[in-house]
Length: 538
Image (cartoon, rainbow, N blue to C red):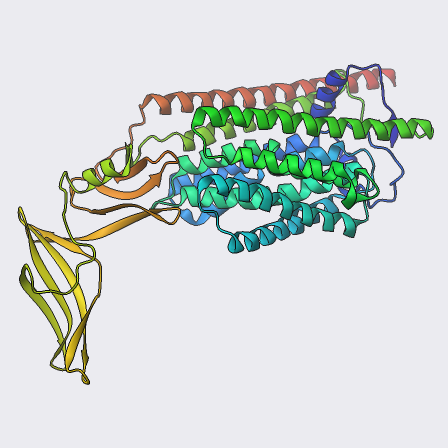
């Protein structure tokens, strides 16, 4: 089943060749049963290949469910799309690291359990800490997140390592990556949901942008940070008393804190670049160094370094052309999926338009149609300034009184109070019963409030009746974007962006279909030629 690796081949060329070559069912079986098939003594030097297939599959499924939501407006499928967005980068990255693990003593099942249970345990511990300690500002929130989450992931990772009884630095690296991946998936799903579900209708643009940004950052955040800590934990026998472990743990906390700092876009981008560089270099050095140690030990012990013994295909075999046809079809489907995701992400306005305001004051001015209201938010029940009262009685006694105060310029302020009669003191006590409303030209508007992370962002009356605002999206820099329903909108299929995307999609469909058919015909001709040669030989 195995043969010695060709060390003379260029590693990069071999990596690409092994990734895109035809893989047999036996190879899939070996990957899925690795660590439980009794061949634990073999050293794996296969180049990763399954991760790319998993990534293409998840991206294609993600595109399918986005299109369903886009064309049907059925929010039933939004949770599935959110889940696929959260896993389409995280899971392939974890599988990539698993394929790089050279010793065949860890199974996919064990790594998946560490991801599910370890990630969930880390979330539980982190939420306990967040409930006990609340950050007073955004800067301390970044510090709390960095320490709390990294410590909780590390604790969960240590438990996984102890239960699995795998203490090599590489296994620690892999278990740390699994726990970090599980934590990242849960967190990404939450962020995607919160940032895209602020509207009566799901904002696909925000959902896709958030999913893609957090997905790509998964390659250099939680998974990598916890993997680094896992390596450091297993580096020495005295695991909880070595300085390397705590140094790397502090490094992970520091990278996490820097990643969450509330900075302006430009400096934050520079910080991201620094975090990616530092974390990526440290992680790569750990992984490469430990892999080389395993290979060197195998050579000293005269244990061969092996790669999978695959079918040798060349252009004289029909299977070669069949595989080329399948590859062309898969690449075409992947590109079509990317076009579909871009189509769903680009805001063509459809039935919703947007308008952005720089701060809360501009937004309130727009919603109140240029009016400003001077009301007393703490007004107590008083006959002073009251032009009229509306009284609701029960059993002959008033229970709800609304006082109408003339605010001038045709504006009436309405203050509602509940009335309670005390028989001992023979007097009524009045308490504010509801929020303030204003009446303009016979139309009453209730006061509305928008909160941002628990703090009041804007308080306003929806006086502007020229637009139908259906939702809001708060920006990190203090701005706000409103979504306006346009009942008269008619989809314009000649819109340039539609035309470009549809043309690209059609071209990819045609190219992949033609390539597939042409290569299948080529395979049929080669097979027919081989059959003639065999017949002539007989």
